[in-house]
Image (cartoon, each protein chain N blue to C red):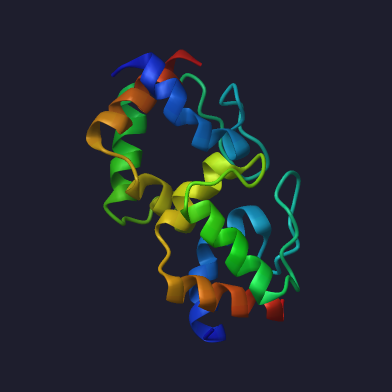
Length: 80
Length: 80
């Protein structure tokens, strides 16, 4: 994944997960998550699977992402 | 708008805005917002306009909504 492109896509994640992926309240910490794990979860959300309590929020977010977007986001998040 | 259908669509909003539209942290209170205002804002988000600091989050959310979805959500939120 392209870290710089992932950083741009990550703008959509900041309100909940924080600029450093630190998380807040019910929104989990993302920083340092292995890219493989982020990819797996975003693809589950995109496929309409129930992942956790924030699934109704994350499904529409993931629906807008291409495989490349997911790879880029996953690469960026791993660097946080 | 159809309030019952709006309530179902509102599931995507709960993580940030709360089940009663009470808001939390940087996520504004929605309860009681006039339907006309909600409709206007969701259509701006959907059109890619910058509305406020959470625009990068709200744009993908709004992108998944039809005109009917927006009317229903707006009707439901007005009842909160």
